[in-house]
Image 1 (cartoon, rainbow over the protein chains, first blue to last red):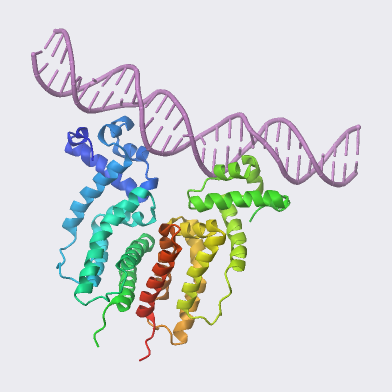
Image 2 (cartoon, rainbow over the protein chains, first blue to last red):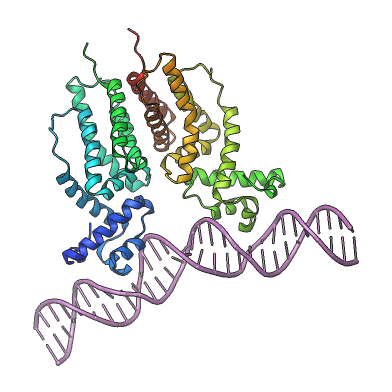
Length: 195
Length: 195
DNA sequence: AAATCATATGACCACCTGGTCATATTGTCA
DNA sequence: TGACAATATGACCAGGTGGTCATATGATTT
């Protein structure tokens, strides 16, 4: 977490640093993002950065936390009883909605998919855990075949959703259609069909 | 393509360069691979490298071509009439087989999935084209629902297969099981079910 | 042997990275 | 005002990158 010196900064300066970091992390994945670039964008001296944050990971976690708050406000709440499939579509729509208001946020998310650093792996594992829970819950509810490997499903969807976003550019319609197609296929594949 | 000076080299020297490149490309994705490291591994001067190849892309394409020849010999031939699903499973088994004889080859393949450079995008597009054809053919044969977006299917599988390989480490059993699970799900999702 | 051409070589270039640290500046309290 | 602590600063470091090029060596031809 950021050091005290950072929290003591003026709101304006904190925002400048936040914005600079967001910009950099939305262009380059975490592993490739440059601290030099961030301090240049933020207009702060290099030495000051290390006065505020321990290192790049420290900064990233802070940024991720702040983004999560913003995103939470942008995305409309979803009925917690929604099925896994509904949840995924909702998430994709959320990505698009966020992408409209904060294009960088969605890009930062998408770039996680092509970062295989140990740091990112841990982060993603934690982040996907709640979706695994939803799948397991839907198995209990008889919505998803019990023999399905939830880990495989999550990975397929997570990886696809973000890869597709990464490469769709700004064509949101195409993106949502792709995701819906993918979800439809997986739904057919894992749902319990009532005859 | 490599310059004449490269082709004029002794077999031994060519092999040394090939091996060094394979080693580097199996550790770092194309974008991150270091020419400096390659010339060091190969024991050739930096200047000589540029005597042989125009740049890193030139080298990569050469390596990919040579690898393709080797792989073709390792993987047992598949009945060209095999369904798309059989083809994918066959490919995954091929990846494992290659991984046993030439572990670096499979790693190089897997690393393509986390490289979003323009160069790699073009390469993958070309490489996935033949699978798209197979899907389209299977639609004609009544094996796959005609409304399915073959592009989406290919991406889902390609991305999953290589991501999974990247993170499965050396656990081949787990890897093949994951792929089979994924293929099964997608098969359920896109196949025409005969009742 | 001399001249010509192909190739080999590594020092060098500009530019980047993450990180450090002595020094300068500012704020706070006595 | 003086003393002390907190913070700001950017020059600097070691190590990396892709790429160049003058020079040296070797092979061929005249």
